[in-house]
Length: 123
Image (cartoon, rainbow, N blue to C red; front, side, top):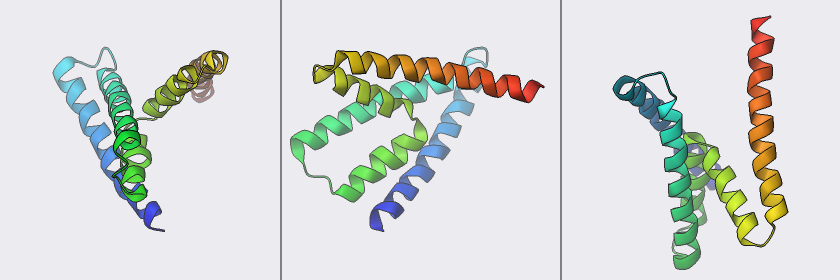
């Protein structure tokens, strides 16, 4: 139960952070390009990579803190970080075909889902 609470706490902070960053980016950089999304996705990828590697090397974080930061905070900040990390690990473990399939399916189906949602709502 403790991990569930840790994830919820991290998720609350991640969601609010994503909103604040997106609003700030639109205000300062303009709304023509989704700068906020790009910023949170790239930041999330960087932070998840750092956290995963640090946790693997140091092994000093409790499971609750790891879940709070990775699943909770970064999961709410962005799900792209998890996707990028998983794809990287597949490629790193000599599973290049699966890494490419993961990347292609996530991108292709993600774009298709956006198109389907927009099309459905426009009718």
